[in-house]
Length: 254
Length: 364
Image 1 (cartoon, each protein chain N blue to C red):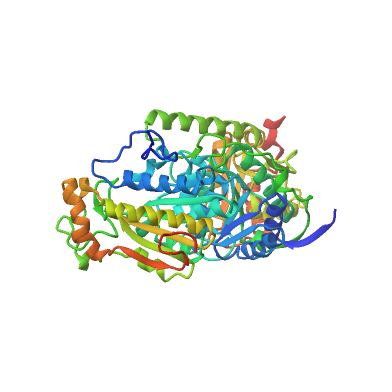
Image 2 (cartoon, each protein chain N blue to C red):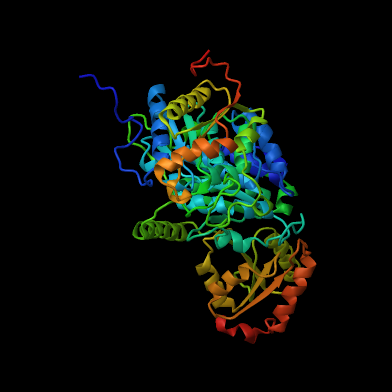
């Protein structure tokens, strides 16, 4: 019998700590599959965030070095500058990459660091219990916006990925989601492409992944899948935000 | 080996390169801008990497990444910038990563000024960042010593897998003195590190973490660090004594203040005042025992610092009630003259009647 589906080599056979309906486990799998497909497991180094994915080193079977909250891309810069032949990726949440780590992120992109950033946007600080994130939608409830995010008091959701498009060093930026098989397929291709950009030494690549947090959204898991399509993508539309790779549409090297 | 006349900031950079440092991450701040400027050119010549980071926060985290990759790496700054690095220094200590951080201190608190000062003694020796940890802190007092201690800093960092801070000041960075440099170390000749993140090729995954959620596990990690700090305390204390043999009062000072104190001691010695100098070269670990012996023998210590009184607390801990501990300090970036310090020495010396033989009878 031919085996057509198996656990990626770059993922450990471990039970994950993520809540039911959370998108992190899907995204972990997509990252691991990309690493496997490109055959780079033995030269990949990951930098997890502070946040829900802080324990990612328990799941990815690659070398992992922990960064302070928001500093993943600065730590990754150090790792990559010393070892340009290695593949270095960061895995960061919205609070990590778009609030406390905004400066590190923009400047890593602007320097054109040959890094791959996976940016998981679920519009909330999951690990700390559901406070307002930089990406929380207007009107969306959180433990620090009990009456919903108020633009006058709290500002509006920050579109970090759009901001990064302005930086000359960013080569490939795409926003995807993991709320449906179709979107997951697209996300898989984008993540693989973001690693390919690094392998080809083109510059900075980032994939923003809209992801479900039923626990802090206080939604049924199925409803949270729908909510991404119906509400979240209105503010954070899916698609390629910047692509200077010259690859063809399948994500293969031109 | 020839002597080269160089300013302190350049000495620091050149010594780092000769120690095998090929990675420098920094951010401009006066009065140490000559270090990143020097490194930006010098590292090009030796095939190294210089990155001007977007902030001190980013630069210390780049240092962290380079250290994870096994490189000898350095960042430098001055007081306000070093405050920003403290988060990263705590992580370096927790992750047990070797790195060298130089602080060419200026006046504070806040933005303060850009004049030489020693107001960061507490920050350097007591942590600065969060958690139970220690930085090895080296305090050079001349350009030659800045060279020697920079080389030593890289060795200590690697030996103990711990951050090492070189605590200088704006004066030391600017002054020019002849320096004899050792032959450069080829980074490729340094012993391989068996804990670095290089990709899991033919070996199991490696992780470098400071998140230890189980209190028992974190406690064990803290005890491990404590044992390391104890070993450093036993092995690495360093100090200089100057004219202490017949001294009836000993000035305790580090770095630039110690140089000023030396000038003052020379002056008062001409008048027959029997005073010596104790100069800690390691501020952590602080050389308590040798200073305790001087406290026991002389009963009169005068801590002199370019701040409002910080190292004096360690001097009191060393003296442990054996005699008097006086303090003289000038904070805010004021550089006291040797005459001024000489006046203070005379004040305490004659005030305590140390010119009278009876006052020192206990030494017999």
